[in-house]
Image (cartoon, rainbow, N blue to C red; front, side):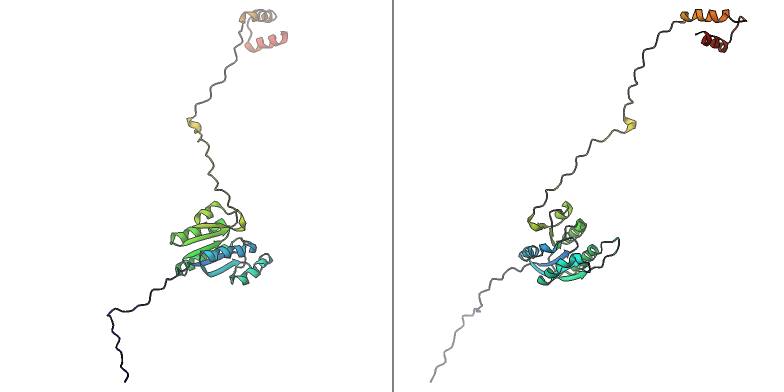
Length: 232
């Protein structure tokens, strides 16, 4: 006969050793302004993005009916970008508006933990600030010409093309405030030329000569002046 052996339990449950779980990469939304960024930066861009997190949303914005965006055709296929065609409207930057609206929709949907704004356009400064106010990380990507305001608004800014960002420009020093004209001391009066000393006695012979030729003992000032001008 075969005896059945009974396993004795110690009363402690046997559990498998917990497996270490790799930290999850943050989900990212990559929004590219094709009107502002050259297609030549596409490979460099995504080599950086994939090290930061998982780009689950990849969208590129522009008027793709224009031939100047033709260079983006190959990077769009290679990096699986979703094109958002934005027809140009006279007097309005339609691409910027479409990209900003999508960013706010993604923000409120809670789909990602961070944004990658790919543009050198300083008009996106307020968008970067708004996203960070909501507690999300903003990675900016652009060229060295990017304005200081947009660079500062991002959590981290990545300069494309191997160039380095220009140093932040200092605020120009203000000139000393001018004193209002009403509070300024009046200018000193110009010195008066020295008065020429007059000698009335020198005119006596001329006056006597004028009276000598007059027919009356009295002369008006006008008549006296006339005679003096005639003789002198």
